[in-house]
Length: 341
Image 1 (cartoon, rainbow, N blue to C red):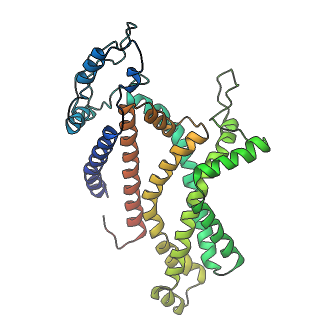
Image 2: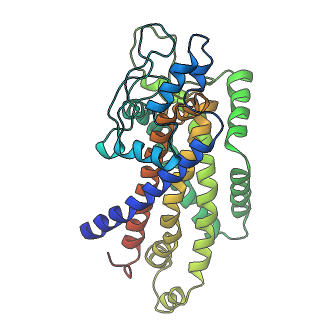
Image 3: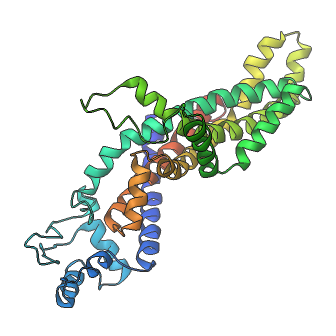
């Protein structure tokens, strides 16, 4: 397995590089540039802006700018607005040197900002992942085992609703219902901001997590339930299941050993893309519920045209997506003995 994992990691490197290249080109082709917000300052002279543009390499071709981001470039500290404080700090940056650059807006290293927000994002995304796959597998299995029953119809309706409802719309509806009308749950945030002692209340955090976690979990439950139901119904009709019945094996043993193990294969394959969909959905949900995670940081960076921070967020998201795909491959191989590492 170790050799397999090493090979998959090596294969993932060109994928991640390709994602960063395409993202970099799309960002640089978008209207505006990182100096737009400085240009709005009346004290920023055209000469200083042009000098800053040259020293940041923004006057170079896009591919050359990408190489600057990858291998590094020397910048000098420049006072754009004339207040005596350097607005762009001189640094030797380069992704291959382990440096994602410095945020234009926060004037801090990009990696430092992202590492501060990742725990909040994981706190928001891991519970829906566990709840969604757990309930989705159980509901899909029960629906398939009771095909055509009232339970099956209810589960199918839930799956359709969970798939059709947009996350942001459902989040706003839940805020209006439970936070504005009933006033039983907080409207947003990660904790009660009125606490002045600076302590962390676990119960308070859990209460703030109820709405965003419910919104994210519903989509996962809907998708996993549909796949699990279809997979179980398909496996039940296979020849080896009929052969196991003809041998006199108990229904419980047939279901646990032959049906469930094979029915879980599509679910394992779904894990990688499902993780990517969860991260993309968390970006919107963090904005709706004012959750201080990496998604909200990325949205703010986009509006501020903070290119180093945008690229850092894209890189971390790509790495998490590739990790999800590797986990899917490992789970698939563990569930299917015909697969060899």
